[in-house]
Length: 201
Length: 263
Image 1 (tube, rainbow over the protein chains, first blue to last red):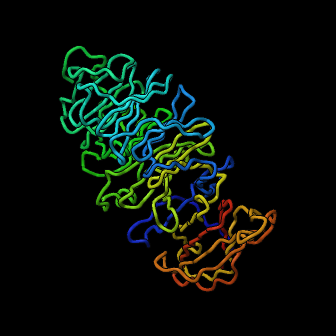
Image 2: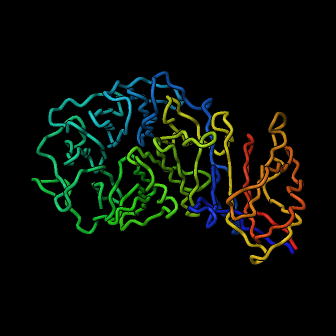
Image 3: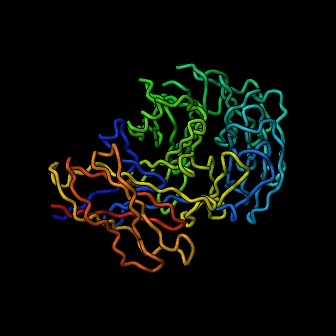
């Protein structure tokens, strides 16, 4: 007797294995137009057609600006702008060389935060500026652009910038979560709403 | 919210009942947002929202792995389109693990570099019509594509371990042959990948142990009529069969189905 073994599937491995040993590595489950399942190769990497930068450290952030022809990259403690020919332009040296870097973008500017400081990139002039306004949050963890302002969080509050001006901050322009107060982890925009995320539900 | 005259106002209908482990686990694309979250019971899971109530997309098997992790707040994630499919990838550097969620088939895959290291990428951006991926350790920005069959000239381990099958309804059987249906004729013109091979091992005890590795030819370049088969597999006393298939060649690999003939 001949039978088909439905071999395809994803990672479902249980402990003990004898219940479900199913494991899938570097293959993804797809479905053909005729509803046949197939496991296909995941993508590979090529550096020859990429960029090897001379800075030490990891690539902490890549951001493709919507309104410029540049790819912005945070590598170690340097922000670079990369043009369409994959030539890179030194932007600015920042205060940290590892960890999460948040990025927000308005029509005219981009703002990056590395947990210690904030940096504004003028998209027209490609001038990179460290934010020195004393009212800018001292431990900026994350940033988004919402409307025509930037919103930056520290552990307790969300702060908003001047209109179309990531270099202008006022310490009174802030708000926090009052219903379920906790450390703020992240700030994001989804479906036209600004969300503040905390660690515990 | 508290304060004076604000450009924003609280929307009481938009409270999300999931916590977030770390900003790096959040990814947004196409009106979707994923993150590594905690529910009210403290379970760590991957959740997805389109703006309303989030849904858990991680399986209990993946969540049980997360529960064993000593550190999850180093998680980094991103989303990308590849072959018309939207993917969410999350990496844990200290735990040396990477997972990929396919939004089309709602299925998870482990991603590894070399034998068992986490995948190299920590961030991604679409630029010039290509996906560029940033390395989590080195100052390298890779071109990332299904057209590349290596991780920058390092062999990619591709592996599938099937579920347990009972072809004879749990009764012992003698297997005459196993046939794998996969894409054939994809060998390189010369070199060690001229004749790509699937490395197959078979378990007769529900995946607890596997037998010796058998190398099955999937065809030289253009050779599309190869029988990728194993004959006379003998008695399966406990009535079950599990296949482990591995592929390391610098070529494309698509696995479609398998057949067994038994008596």
